Image (tube, rainbow, N blue to C red; front, side, top):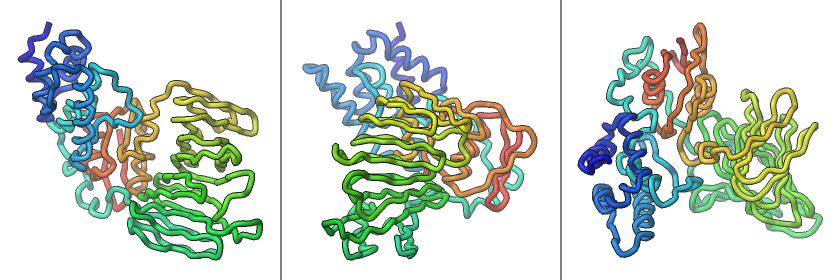
Length: 402
């Protein structure tokens, strides 16, 4: 058995962001043992969580509350920890482990030792001289109304954008773009509106039926100012997360450019349909959807992912990590054994940069959870110190070499 003083030392190292990967693995393994429950009071004390000896279940609730509290307070320059949404945290190892990671703002399971030996981008050829204009994405988009007007959208709130005869478009108190259908009857004025996020932009749109659509960078959604009596249909490009308002009378249908349609009644799901990605991916978080292509139909259950390849074949993955799929919506990149080209495609879209490969492409795989508000220097330094890869930056182009 591990001596509790040694365990306390590991917890303290996690808090100080000085723990190594092997030490974190050791700590997580210990938390799997029955001995961990015996030392709950000491662990709670280290994490500054009150411990209720009379009620075991309340201990975990207080740890969960502590996680949420620290999550709100987390330094936005750090890589974020586990998220409560879509994380399965039974009483035991993961509740404490998550709290350790939150309080310590640990970078990630794989990236914990990077900052101790980071050389920084300043040592790279051409780096540090041209990165001032490269910043993380922000809340911005363009609304193209049905009559052709283009209106820039930002983080402004409580602003009337368009007032039509039978509809209105405005931003609400939290900065969402809200579309209201104000008329009734078959003679309503219906216009087809489009919201487009540029590279380095993200935006949330509330559709006329109350459905929430969150657009990732370099994405778009086309929708009517009022839905038809029997169907709700939208078209998207890029990546969009939907929380669909329930309406059993009106199926909600999402169409992509690559001939995939998703049909739902009320559910939460994510669609990744970027033109430069090898697959169109539809991932279900809650509810149920039917994916339809030219060649196949597939009903998805929660945690299923349908992938449409360039060959037109539809593939089904089950039990996917939905937290990593929607990490972008929660403000982080989450990479799980991801190749460098896929990593750089995400970076390119979010930081609005071009990527050029110089020579052979590195084959290493990368795993980390990274705050999307980190500077480009921080992100590339993490990559360079983890993989056999080098970067140089000139103007808004990142050059990648092995």
